Length: 398
Ligand SMILES: [Fe+2]
Image (cartoon, rainbow, N blue to C red; front, top):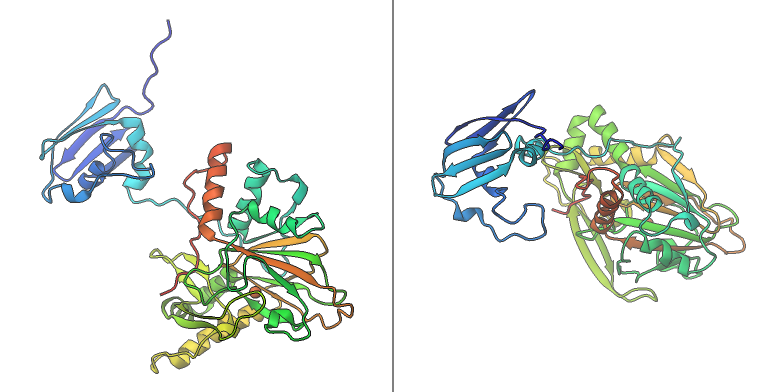
C-alpha cells in the first residue's frame, strides 16, 4: 500500500468581501475577487487560446461570501452572485506571482560593445526543432545577434536559414533583397559607400523584427559589418543624462520612405511612421530601438523642446558612432549574421576597394513575434525554461 500523494501546500484561508488569502508554511498570497473569478477553473483555461468569458458579466459589487479549504488541497469560494469556485490549492499557488502583481522578468541584460565575441552556430548543425535550434533563437532574442557559419554556397541557403526563424516578410525590396554593387545605384545599399549603423524599416509601423544578412561573396576590400547594441546606448544615456533619456522615450519623430518610381526589386512607396528612438514599457523597461538618421523626416517638434531634443538625439547618434560601442566584423563567404533589428543597429564600412565588384549580400526580414513564439514553443518542447518567457516586444510607433 502506498500512501496517497500529500499536497505540497497545506493552506489556511481567510477572506474579506474583496479578497481571499491563503497561508501555508512560509508561503502566502492574497487574491483579488475579480482576478479569482477571471481564473476560476469552471471557465475555460486562462492560458488557452480563446475564452468566452467576459468580466462584464460579473456584478460591480461582487463579493466573497464564504471561503474554505477542503482537506488542505481544495479552496472553495461561495460568491454573492451564487457562483461557486473550486480551486486546486497547488494550482492556484502556481499563479500566485501573477496574482500578487509580480511580472516575469525579462532575460537578464547582456549588452555588448566593441569587444563583443558573438555566439557562433554551424548551419549544418541546426536541425529544425532541435535544442540547437532553440539555442540559436534564444541567442538572437537575448543577446541581439548571432553568427552562422558554413551556409551552402547557394541562394537557397538564405531561405533555409530564414525558415528556422519564421516566414520571410515582403518588404518594399521584395522578399529577399540582393545587395550587389550597381553602377547606377538607386539606393545607398547598392553603392560601395559605408553606412552608419541604423535599424531597418523605421518608416514602418512595425519594422523588421529580425534581419538576416547572408554573405554569398565578401568584398575583396572593405565592407565590414558594424554592429551596435542600441540597448547599451540607451542604458548609457539613461545613466548619464536622464533628461535626454526621457526625451528619447517620450517624443516621437517621423521616419519616411518616399520613392515615387518602382525599382527592379520593389514598388513605389510612401511610408511614414512616427516613433520614439527608445521604446519603453509602462514599467520603464527598454523594449526596442528605432534609429536611422537617413530615414528621418522633417522634425515637427514643439519649439519649447526642439533644442533639447536635438541634443538628446545627438547624444544617441554619438553613442552609435562611438568606436567603443561598435563591434566590427567582416562576414566571409558562406557566413550569415542575424540581428534583432529593433535592438541592434547595423552598418558597414566603405568597400570602394572591392575592385572585382564581387560583394553579394542577401537580406531578408522576419517578424518579431514569430521568432519569439517559436522560441517559447521550443522551450516548452525541450523543457528549457519558462514557457511563457517575457521578451523585448520591440519598437512601437506612436
Ligand atoms: Fe540596413
